[in-house]
Image 1 (cartoon, one colour):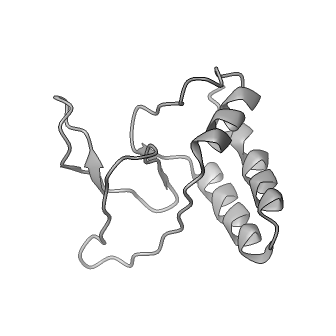
Image 2: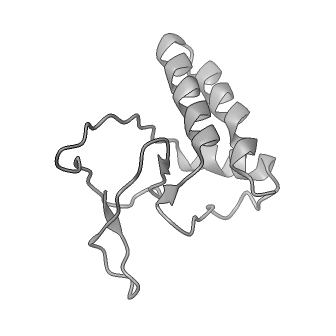
Length: 114
């Protein structure tokens, strides 16, 4: 995945996201993705609204008015990645957007640090 800022803040760094990890791209961040040559490429994506992210942040004790940030574009948490895939598959079968948002909220506490 390209787009993570370099140490001086300019875009263009390439990040390899391993299997069973989550790529986190901040809202509005320009990015691209492409497979590593010789490796299969499967991914699932969702683009939650800033309002949903703020609501989830509030639920886990972060200030709702501030957009959460992540130290890296890659979250290497296989349990969270597995929960995300399950949630994503459930959202594919739920016609109601509120049910899908509820599924997203169900996995959000798993992303907290102990």
